[in-house]
Length: 315
Image 1 (cartoon, one colour):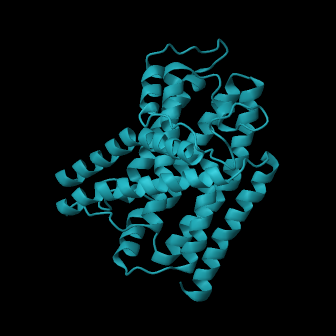
Image 2: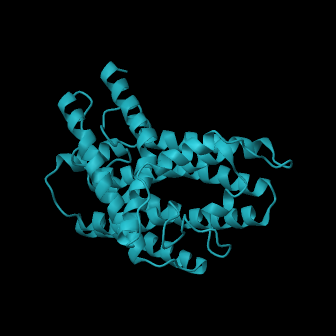
């Protein structure tokens, strides 16, 4: 491991951990602007995390060690996911681990632990949210795999770093297969990050909430870790989308000038992506939970069409 590679890897992790709440705050601010409402402070997520970390964690008497340990596992899985996604550079020490299947496995690991922790207490809300979360994951993960396989078939590798290098080194072109995969990835990202129209992170209505239902029993530092992990998941999905569909600007470790330019480019792309996410949520209405399977089945179908287009047209 070279010194420059270690520094670049550490920088990527620090940017993800420190910048993920800022991305969530930016999305909330854009949603307020688009809704003609008074926008919350951009640094509000940091204040919320600071407040929760200083509060005492109240844990039910029936809680097992799984309930107490789940927030740390979820947070660690999301940090590792952000570390292996090539957001700033492709030549990183963890690049060999940046495999598409391993990345989906990290998301699945976090989902399993948070769902088991929700059912551990035995409350109706937790069990309800866990069942809905597993339903969403059961339908979203195959669609996400098909999206990643579309890029893998196009580049001949399942490594995200190699995918970025292959697509980024080519001349700008619109690939029909990636166009279908991009629409499917957007739909999966909305579902996986509990965003409208699949879920609403700001609601606490019994008939509509999914993610919030699983974390109602958490408080203090445990709740802070889960909220931080949710922001990291949004950051990871944003980085995956930018790496696959907009890889230009991602540098190599041995190019110091490229690393200096990669950071402002990443910030600009995340700002545009966050505004686009806020626009999609503003223009969409929360769908019924029974329509979510149709929504994610459409995403899976679009991703499969992208693979078929690649094999039939070679593009």
